[in-house]
Amino acid sequence: MEKAKTKKTKPERSNLVAFLMLIIVIGLFFLLIDEYQKQPLQAQVYIQAGHEGRIFGKTGSVSKYGREINWTKIVADEATRILRNAGVSVIRAPADQKRVSIVKLALSIHFDGNKKACQTGASIGFNHASDKNAARAWRRLYRQTFPFKWMPDNFSKNLKYYYNYRYTQVSDAELVLELGEITCPEQARWMKPRLKELGALVAYFAAKRVGASGVKNPIFY
Ligand SMILES: [Zn+2]
Image 1: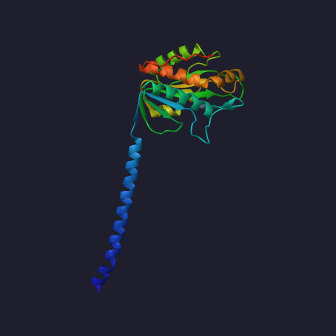
Image 2: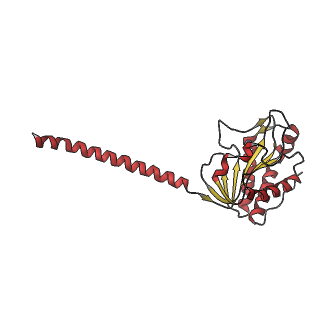
Image 3: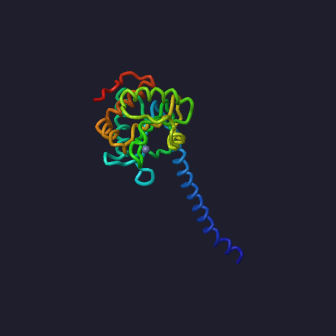
């Protein structure tokens, strides 16, 4: 009787062992995929279109002139196109690419929005003293073109503590570029027909920062 008992339980136990092994193998497989996705990406420039890819939560400002989420994409795509044509490698990121990018320069494109129109204008966000040089250079450049007001650097928490800083490791700078206020009629009317030129200006700036030649300073009409 004793012997028969042990014989009966054996196949069940080996089934259990096989099942557990399978679970472990599947688990390891997913762990490996996860590890791979955590591997940092590398390029010269990182360009993020603010809010891109989101369907709820922080989907960006909206006014009768347009949606920020659409505008950031136009600017980021044009900047990326021009930079790649000039031989500059670009990581083109949406709002939530939760993967570290190692680059020289990281730029996140945004447009500001306010309940009370025309409270703000263009501004820059950054979180490290080493970003200041590039921030100053961008202001100097964009000031020649953007005919409206500027806010102080990091004037809002969203600029100073931008959630995406943790995903970019830079040797030059990581900046949030607020290109103007989409809810301010005079600013929005100026920006709307110039989104591609704004992309070209971002490309010109980025190329200069990474030492690439062949990207022209665009002419604004
Ligand atoms: Zn935004």
